[in-house]
Image (cartoon, rainbow, N blue to C red; front, side):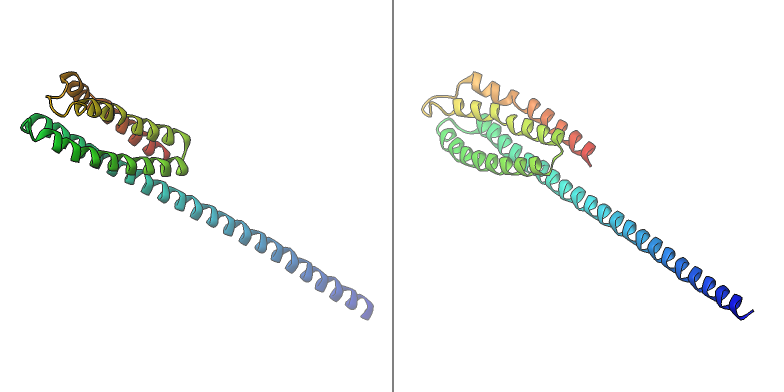
Length: 176
């Protein structure tokens, strides 16, 4: 009987050790899976927040840029002919500065992605081109009244700009 007791005790002890080892491996694996899942979720949330910040920054600066364009339109409509060239020169400097800031924000959006949002951001940046070309033509002859066609092109640039901004906002919403 002593021999069978020893074997039963050994078998019971071995089973307990084996069960403990299996449980430990299962717990370790579950903990690893949970940690990986938490890390992926945290990384995804950081990416989302980073993108959201970049998108909002671009949208905000697009509005600041169009404010400069509104000022140009106002100067064009209301300034006296002799004051207009100087006022336009000052606003051209502000427009170039605003464009540089917009371009940097577009690059950040390109970096953050995804490609559809980057494409929409580039289209928004390109939508400032007609404003700039029309403004260049409006001030090409400082001594005379600006070319009416250039003024018309400048005023006609708002609609495509707002459409590009709306497209960017839609792409940003889809990305988030």
